[in-house]
Length: 199
Image 1 (tube, rainbow, N blue to C red):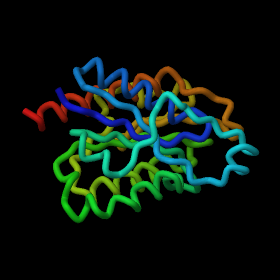
Image 2: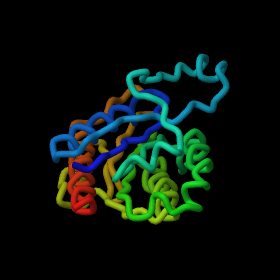
Image 3: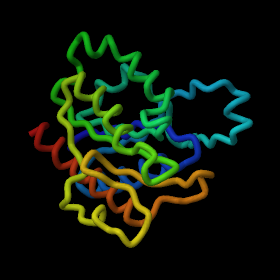
């Protein structure tokens, strides 16, 4: 059974909701799943005044924990077309793992949330995936076997680079059912790929 870490940062719960859906898909495909979050780096007064939400059910993960997993699915909201500083800071601290080649051959994937449809979902996913590629990980995307991402009937996320959702400018939108189904599909695909790598 492949051990899968879903590692995320979420300010308002949208990325956290995708993390839960990804976990469901990965578990359904036989994965042993842990959901963890990266440390908050914003000052306490900013966190409080902006109303950030923290899911205390998910433990904080540190870089050395990554070695325990066969697959790592990374999610972060978009900040000006790239990954959030909290997630960037986490990966900036993985130099020791990179130096040892610890993550080479592990399976990786990405997910994100943006305020608008064209707010940088794909560029954010590229900025997540570039970290995984530099670590020598095997990248899994959201392929068109999940045809929900082809829908034009609603405002949705999803691309070949990973699962995603649109939060709205004020964060009031919740992930669309299509987005959650895409996340489940991605989680299942990562679990199956990681199981093959472990075999």
